Length: 446
Image (cartoon, rainbow, N blue to C red; front, side):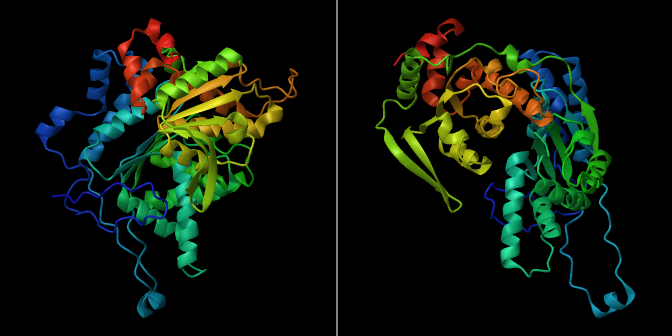
C-alpha cells in the first residue's frame, strides 16, 4: 500500500518529512469503486453545473477536460523514491558518476487568462478530486515567502559553499508530488533568480505542477532585470506544463452581485456610523482592545482596534507604511474579519500604496477574510491609472494587471455568497437568514 505523505505545513521553517514513496505503487492509490464514487474534475464540474453553483461555460469545460486527463494520468503514475545524493567516493571522483535518472512525470497545466474567468475554480476542482495527501495548493506569493525563508535557514545551518536549492527542491517534492499554484507571477529579480533553478530541480524530482496566472509564460517577468537569465525557466515551464488560455470574456465574479452591504462609498458620517455598526455586530459587541500588537517572525504589527477576531485599520495604517505580504498574511491568519476605513482613490503617483493595497487584498482573499470597507469612490473607480489625476499618463503594465485582479476580487468579496461562506459565523448566519433584498439592512443594523 502506498505510504502517503502529509502535505507540507505552512510554517516556513518546518522541515519536510523524509518518508519516501514505494516505487511499486501509483501516486494516487484508488480503487475503481472509489474512483466511480468520487470521480475527477469532469464529474465534479457537471455536478456543480447541475446544482446551479456554476454556469456551464464551453471555455471552462475545455480546461476541465484537460485537467481530467491529467487526473487520469496521475492515477497510474508511479513516482520513483527520492534518494538523498551520497557524498562522492574515491572511484566516483576518479571515473566520474552516472547522471541521476530523470523522472518522466505527467505533463502539468499552466492556465492563464483574464481575471474572474474561472481559472482558480477549475484548478481547485482538480486539486480536491485528487485522492492523495501528497499534494499542496498554495498562493504563489506565500510559496515564495516560504522558499526565501527556507534558503535563509539553510544558509544559517550549512557550510557557505553548500547549495540550498537542490535540497529545498527535494524537501518540497517529498512533501508534495503535486503542487497547485494560484496566481503565478514573477515581478522581482530575487524571485526570478531562485525560480529558474528551483523549478528545474523540482521537475527533476518528478513534481507535477498545475498553476493559474494572468499571463502567458512568455510574458512573465517582462522587462525585468537580467530577464535573459530567466528565459530557461520560461522554456522549462512550457515544456513541463501545457499552456492553455481561459478567456471566455465573462467575469463570473461580477455575476454574483447579491451584495451584502459591507462596502461603503463615498466617505461620510453615515458611512462611518455604518462601519461602527458592522464592527459591533461582527464582534458581537465584545470588549475592544486598543493598540494591540501581533508578534511574528521577530517583528510586530500594531492593531489599532480589535475584538473577537475582528480588526479595524485605517488605509494609512496598512498601505502607506512599510508593510509587506508577510504582514498581511499574518493579519489574515489572525483575524476572520477586517474593517478597512478611508480608502482613497489612487493614482499612479500613489503606486507604492496601491501595490500594498493589492497585496493586502490578495492575502485577505486567499484566507477568505470578510472585508468591510469605506472608500472615496466605488470599487471600479478606486484606481485611475493616471499621474497626478491627469489623463494621458503612462501606465505600467504590471499595475494594470494587478488593479484588474484586485477590482475583480473586491467585487466577489462584497457578495452575499462570500459572506455566508466566510469565517465570521455571525455575519454568515445573518446573511443566510435573509433574501438578497434585505441583506443591506441587516448587516448595517447593530
